[in-house]
Amino acid sequence: MSIVNSDGLRQFQQDNATPHASRVATKWLQEHFHWPPKSPEMNIIEDIRDVLLHAVENRSPIPRTPMDSWTVLEDKWCELSPRYILTLVESMPHRVAALLYVRGDPTRC
Image (cartoon, rainbow, N blue to C red; front, side, top):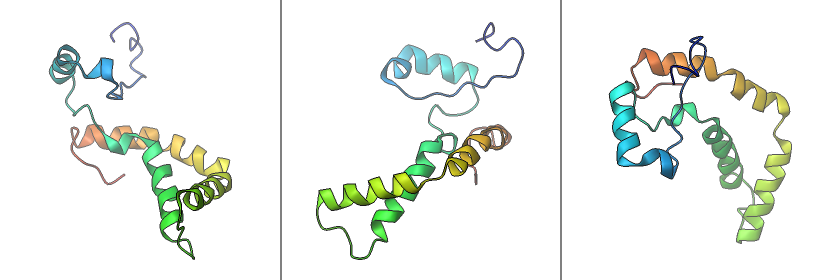
C-alpha cells in the first residue's frame, strides 16, 4: 500500500472478495485501517440496485413471474442515464470523506 499510495491520492476499498476475507487479510486490515471491511456507503452498485428494485416494487401491475420482473429490470436498466451513473461516480470523494470523518461508522451518504 505504501508504494501504491505514495502520492497520498488513492483510497483503499475492501471488496470482501474471498481472498481478501481470509483471517490473515482481515487481521491486517483491522490493524492498519480504522473502518470495517464492509462499507455499503462506498458501493455505488447498491444505489443502482435500489433504483432497480424500486422500479419492480412500484410497477403497476406488479410483476407476477420471474420473467416479468426481469423485463422490468431490463427496462429500468436501459432508462438509467449516463449522467446518473456519472453522478454516482463523482460522489465517491464525498463518500470517502464522510466515511473517514465518522471513522468507519455508518454515514448518511
